[in-house]
Length: 232
Image (cartoon, rainbow, N blue to C red; front, top):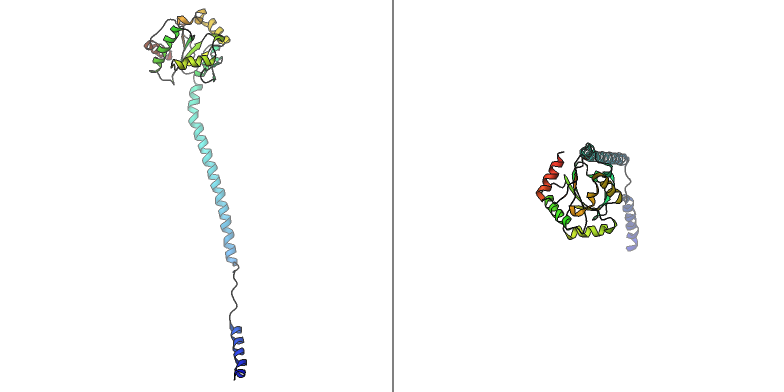
């Protein structure tokens, strides 16, 4: 009985296997339409990136132009100052505190009060205190105060800076170079090298140099003097 049905059962299995659909491939290859669609998308992405880069470059250029335009008025204002100070206004001095070089001409457009002094001079110290008080009532963007040591090699920048800090003086402190001091003597005479007489002079915004003044002045007197010079 079992031998009779075996061939029939085997035949049925073969028929079922023959009629079954082929297994689908694990990976389906992209169609032609999909390939065509992907290529324009990649091209569009590259084109957008180039446009964005152009826009970024234009934005940076616009920012730089705006910065230049903002700086132009300030530069024009400095250039418009007709500065006629003597040659010694272009001689270099050194800020005793910062070590940076400067000239009086750097302050073109501002009123500059210069006081020759010495660290051992008590009269100078009293006058500098009055100047410090005057500075509290004046715009630092319009007025500059310089204490100029005429002690030569007897005092260093470090010594002068220590003197200024010890007395809480906000003025700019510098040691007069031999060339600068000789030029001042030619301009004002030997009296400028006598610190106890508290000599001082003013340079106006246009470079006009005042006469040499001596004697101690109050803070109010200093304010009046520099304010008057600012309008000259």
